[in-house]
Image 1 (spheres, rainbow, N blue to C red):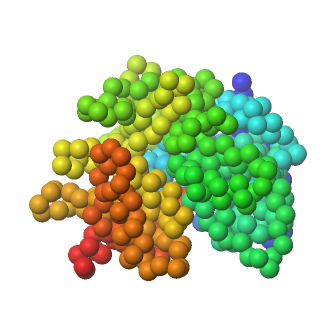
Image 2 (cartoon, rainbow, N blue to C red):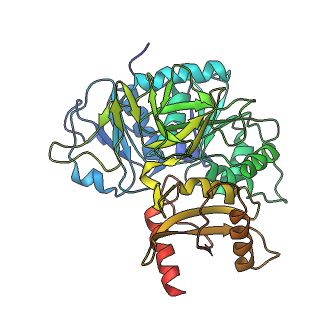
Length: 434
């Protein structure tokens, strides 16, 4: 098993603007003090970022690609890094992003599994929709470069232009979040002819709801859609298949062991999820003066948990309830906002949503939400009332949000995930204004 990433000689970078491919990165741009220090690469310019990554791999340099103006890159000095390691960045949807150290071999192992199971070859081409400071687009780029496939860099384009580029460049492999897929599928210009070559879509970074999955199949006709579940610290945990039940994220990825703790409360199916595999991270990159990051992953007997809760059925299919960092105690009941979000997204009128807790003087906390709506035949307020009524009719002990606020867009992180901190502030300001 190789211990270092490879940039295959057959791999070519393609931008929609062909002039961008003339950019090069050489040792004159490498401003780290010694070859043993980690290369900190900004994602501000995609051309520079991709070519710097190519340089780092070809020269066997440890690297960390970070968001532009990220606070952690200013507060943590360049570090010496062990040969064969690199660092990634968590999304930071619930707070400050974390720098994650892992071996290059921990990803290379899964490259071989993916390419074998999905029959990916060097003749394929990968479309990269997001910035490389986020683990999913970085993973897709490194997998493509390792096997010798071409890379289509679409990260600087709006979703409608990404869709046009997918058709023009004839990309065949697509790693994307459900949010990115929703935006792609809703951006059709009927006067622009389209002919997609996408044959494989791997969706992760959030639950792929049924409505979005249907849109994907309608847009990329004939493409195989595989949902995977994982985290920056764990990499792959599960993969879906043709028999995956609705609501499940699939069965254990090859070489992954899953354990689930007993539920915290009576009547609850979900317990904390623990995983063991060759793909796990090593530790967090923090200086000696810094404490471990908030909501850090925890180890127990060789198994790792990122604080996710869920359960498995008798066939081994995993169902997720939500993250520990988002669990809320309301009226002595533990609530996972993610479960409510999935129910809302099942309605075609809802494009995006976020459910967050708001402090209440009588109950301590109540749930409220933001929704981005697509229906134009009814008023937004009426749609919100119908959505709340539908939630109240759900079986079980589901707690319905007190109020939904229609908005034009949700606050987002650079990764495309919802910025939950900013969403909570927005909900609070809207509630106070009512």
